[in-house]
Length: 497
Ligand code: UDP
Image 1 (cartoon, rainbow, N blue to C red):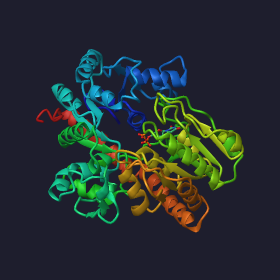
Image 2 (image 1 turned 30 degrees about the horizontal axis):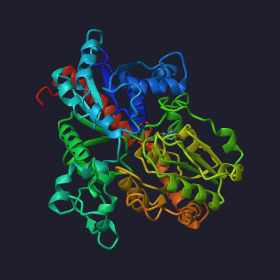
Image 3 (image 1 turned 90 degrees about the vertical axis):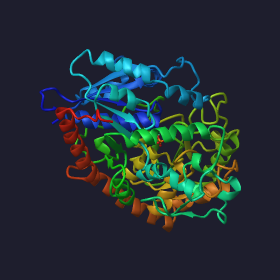
Image 4 (image 1 turned 120 degrees about the vertical axis):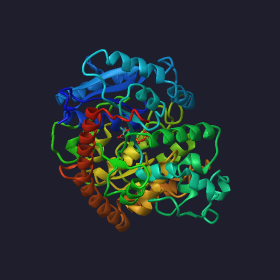
């Protein structure tokens, strides 16, 4: 597998968007492709590469650490995101994003350099948001594959953005409109269950100073994705059959997920236990978790990017304490802001010493698969949702940004594998400790919570089946590689686009 029939192996260049939630699934995709015989060059920015190096403190290239252990031919390359290494990308996130949109020249230079060696690059697999990489790739006359890191349902929403306009659901009508009684149903997006404006990705439900930029970037991304040779997505058929069928009629999306190390799925390769691309050093909580009763611990993490107000952090702390459940809480150093060191209520850690553990970062897959975990209090980032599904942990949704609102809606109302905190960050209202402790108890210690657990265990089995030999995602991965070989061999890698 993997050769193109000309004797040269396929050489895929994989370019993730340079944030944690994009680098991780695309490295796992790279491992999957390399295990099937492709050579992969994995492209990170100098800045993220330096972060991963610092987090993993190893002498060899840390990005390749896991791939090397597995004997995979993955190579590492870096380009600049256009900003100095010490630029605060957390504080000035949108300046960072704008700079990422201008990386085309650096990519072209890298491709020219790599093509001086054998084998030349046969295709580029780029994050959907790296829309500018399409034109660069087309100059080399090779296929361009768009990789979508969110659910197919969200893909359909953006893809059908014009319908929101024509039905009067865009531009947004303001925060008051999002109240339950005013917000009517959106039932016309192909493959997307009835949702309301409050369930749309944040940029579509509310206008903020960055909305125009984000919308422009999204529209460019979707225009490019329409011209992709393939669109791959980190989801699976059994989870999103309707959305996938709906997209089939327009721009087919091949689901290839959930993209997790094999030991968490089919155990086909028990040595494949981690992705190894964390930007922060992982704290090892196994010993603490071992000391807790089965399915009792609430795991709390809001991913790698979002910020939460100090007041909300304090309410969460008190809500966790009042729930009486053991908790394991990831509190990133920049969770409030990179300029504000995290402040938990005075003496909080002292009084909760035996109940909870607070750490800056940890190996999330390892945590979610631990038998003492009873629930996941999550911001509903798509990686977190798919990881929780694949490991059978019901969720408490606390969406804060971007498509997390839609993910939460699907998780609560479609798949019924969790619940959502009442109230919201969106309108700057704080969710109070009483609501937080009530919701935690419902999730981990009620009949309702048990029913959610049963449903997520059934979905977990579907996720695992999807990635097994003969499963829906595995079949898609194999079909994609075969088609890619054919396209590269015949030389019709969409030079026509
Ligand atoms: N993650 C982790 N350790 C942590 C917290 C998060 O490894 O302590 C990983 C998590 O497993 C997931 C990613 O960071 O793969 C976060 O991605 P997600 O899409 O959930 O959220 P984002 O960071 O993009 O908002």
